[in-house]
Length: 174
Figure 1 (tube, helix red, strand yellow):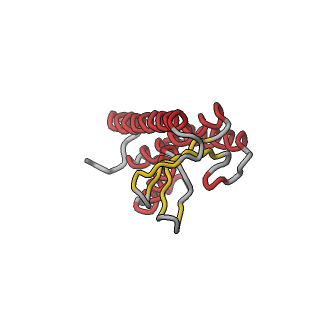
Figure 2 (figure 1 turned 135 degrees about the vertical axis):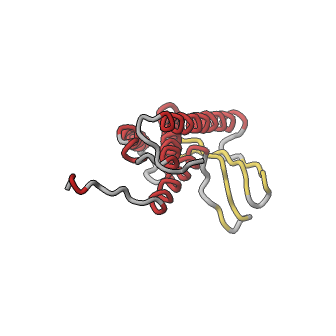
Figure 3 (figure 1 turned 90 degrees about the vertical axis):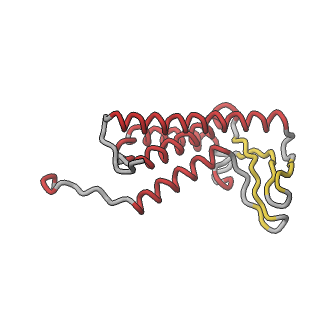
């Protein structure tokens, strides 16, 4: 596959955009389906091992953002998510700069924002359930599919920023 920048409004850009959108929609549906399953199949704080000593499915609720930051400010986090998502949509092409991986990165971030914003808007809290740990020695904060999408998207975008050349402005524009 050619990883060079795609031209704006080209058939290739449309294919990349809609491929990234399809991945984002699949992740959003997966996020909501897994959260729905956890709410129906698990009691709050119930934990079942998947890989004993390393990975559990643990039903918890988060009234804040990552690592429970801003706990109790659900509507502030909801508004922030809407503003961030709107900003990404408005400046999508400028942020992507035609690079294929950035289309996917931005769509992953939007998918995660949408998944957690949906929870905040309709449930007042976010359902988290993926519990990575090392026996009783170390525990990573419990997270969900939307959190993974956001982190992967941000990581991919940052990696792209480090590896891709900075577009040169036309000297006539200065």
